[in-house]
Image 1 (cartoon, rainbow, N blue to C red):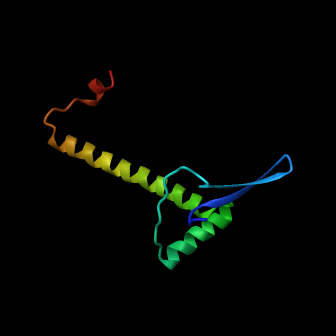
Image 2: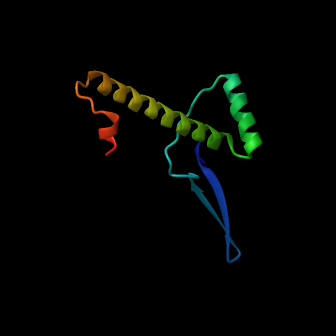
Length: 94
């Protein structure tokens, strides 16, 4: 058995069948964490009854959303600063 595979046993009609395969087809990412960060993720996982990998994935999704929001805000602020044309509030909402 190679590293990264799981062993699945099936009993079909009294016959034992062995199948090797990956648990998911989703891409994987290995990350090295410092001890404090690892403990924090471990604690959250225990409190929420989730695996550490699920907690880490959810935290990364949240961080990416916030990062995207920040980038879009910066783009909007730059456009506003560079724009020469303004529209009064009462006309903008007609």
